[in-house]
Image 1 (cartoon, one colour):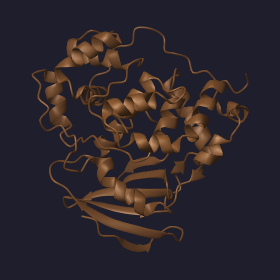
Image 2: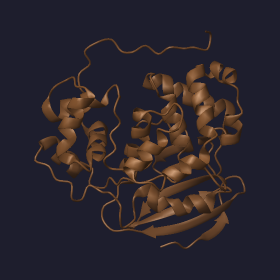
Image 3: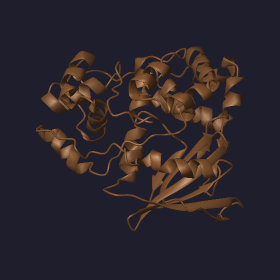
Image 4: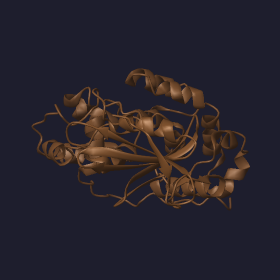
Length: 317
């Protein structure tokens, strides 16, 4: 149920838009957002005692929402030029619609999966209506360590990005797409982003309309559509389709850790490749990506069997 109420925030004088959404069934906001964004370092998202805060660039401008579950309903407050558009996107973001993908109907005899179904009963696969921020950050994670991609994202956000609208001062947005699109690669080198990834994220910033078309596509079409963009391969497309786009069968192939997570939790084997992972997930066809995310988010980490990948600082190179 959408009923907008306007007011003034407690921070800098910005108009606040508020609404309430009703829903049926269990809902775990933290798990829903965390598993959606698990491959993304997001300075534009915070989850704490005050609620879940999420900021994004929309077609109407930047906006921030605060999402809270109160008395069995979702309370939303939003700030910024794109506030109404981001408020309207919350039901999809949290998977509140009639066609939402929840853990209901997901059955397994495997003890690990049975436990995850129980522990993550409120996890819903939501869908983001904007792919710019998640795709840029997933692109920055290509072929580097998690620490390297997190550092690059933070550098980009704090050097060229902007403060998100609203009362919080710890939410930051990526540079506005038009700004990033015209940024030469050598200006990103000091931010620990080498030329290949720099040119890739600048290219993504020029294709906002193509990204918005992907939002309404089914899983296979969205996967194929994203891979038509230069520099976007199966791993990047799979991460985005199975996370921000909420397609339950999308499994990212080519991931450094995911096959090991899946194999270790389902068989006890400490190492696996993509083919083995997909074979193990085949009993969950149609929801393979959902199960893989549940395992990576709530399963046991496989033991490490070698030195960690080094975090390379390229700024002085």
